[in-house]
Image (tube, rainbow, N blue to C red):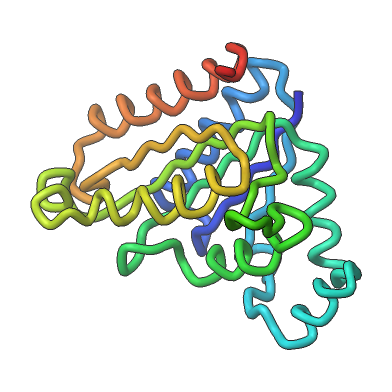
Length: 197
């Protein structure tokens, strides 16, 4: 079993980095091979250009996109880890979605609209917010964040998705953070269970 881990947090120290370390450890314990796509470390170019559009239309993506699409095709699992900024993924990750999950690769248009191509695969999405779960729920922003990535993107292209936001990470005590990281382990351990039909 293979996993593609897409990581979008700058620097080398944050709670997102702790999540990444726990995901790696859990994958190793479960005998899941993985590749990490650290978008900041890769200096991933996030702008979907006019040239990108032309190349996609002619089924001839640029080499950097072809590499990402190959890794995703080869992987049974997609794991995404990122902070929520302005109630959205960081721009570098949004650009990854725009450039990599393209028409003809991740979905195709039919009479009734887009149909996902990346089926029989699982996705696990771990996000972090400074705001508490209560603050987000009061304004409906928890649903905004979830809908964008889960329903609006990954489920649409075919993935079976599990989503977990870790709220108020800047103010949670060490014990609370450890409980969050144990939940990450539990989610990765659930990969051994079959995808529901």
